[in-house]
Length: 106
Image (cartoon, rainbow, N blue to C red):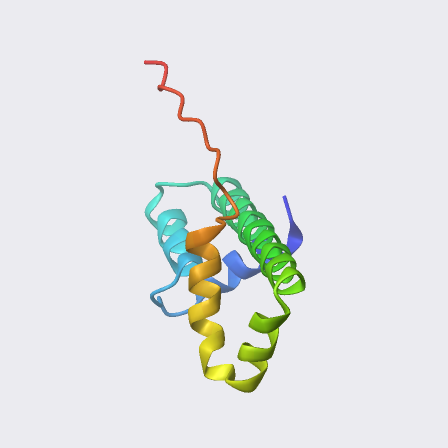
């Protein structure tokens, strides 16, 4: 288990509830729906997944900008367009395109 996620979970367990994923995990521990280890591991997986998708998105965006100098110039001239560019990169070239679904074994 990652020490950072366990520490964040411990802080959230003792703090006033907020509307975020760490607080939701802390509530699940307090209610007995998850053990401390389960909640900390889940948070660790979420952090890792978020880092992986963000890294992939950045790589894809850099590749698109490297291939299209006119797009670089357009975004540099009007930085207000950057959020729309990021949205379009996600739509056009998603970091995760191939996620096979497997039926659950019952």
